[in-house]
Image (tube, rainbow, N blue to C red; front, side):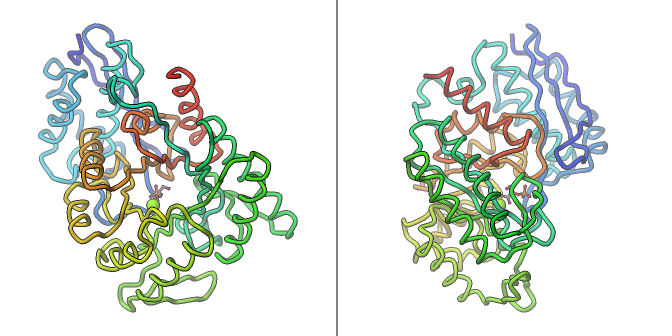
Length: 403
Ligand SMILES: O=C(O)[C@@H](CO)OP(=O)(O)O
Ligand SMILES: [Mg+2]
């Protein structure tokens, strides 16, 4: 029933107005799945390769589609993804492009779910997936590679850890986003938005901490449950390998690795941060380990560019204690199978997993289902903006259907 009978690929727009790959997968019994690849701006050095969409589509049509049509079953995700890997033949999807691979992989999962008549999260997670729902991490202020003339730290993320349900959590993040706007207006600071819909004012990080801290407290008082916040430092983007320093350009501050470790540990302490992603350079496992040791269980220290959803890099990190959590982005590695394997390895070693969007997104909501299916504690998918609310609203629907 789930035998794949057609795979169609096309270029569609992403949220930045760039082209990306969309895939349709059709099965023998009429099952249908459609998915689109997201795209990063602050990409990790070790990510799978995203090819220009036109080239990725042509390569996938030549090498992957003939091996799938009439051969593979959409209900067997591991088989579909193994065929994608074999058709590509490289270890980083540089032939068919990780963008073609991930779009086909996710579309096949949806087609498989469609045939079964099950929601995607249940198809992926099975009947014993548990009853938890992820807490959304919502980007409310940001800069780095996502906006010019804004904060050095890439993302300030609201984390409604005490929310009684998904719906309240999603609305709390939107309220923090709105409160930040009011506080900026009070200070007379004009602001546009960055790629992920976060406010991107021309302020230094210190001011951003003050504003986000205040916004979180205001909304916490309003809603009556605990809201904390976290960061994606995206430190690889500010690391200068020649001088071995982290360059905070808007503040005119340069920190060496030890100073960076102290700085982040102090921030965790001062602001009671619940989550810090990529606080150090993507090649510096040892510095990551040092910080993780200092912070201990006070906050999640999460590897994004460090691990790139790659089990080999995660295994290396586990060996040295480089973090206590991993960001999961299916397009960083190319297939859902690889993303599941990374989560499984993380869980087996006491690491938490956080499923994440990219800065360039589409209306595709697969990651909402992936996060629920795998029972992860957090999903990072913005606070506002259509391509972000596509996932947040899907989470609300999933919770509504499942309870
Ligand atoms: O660094 C990140 O975590 C992501 C998403 O927030 O950004 P990008 O997609 O640009 O890599
Ligand atoms: Mg990141």
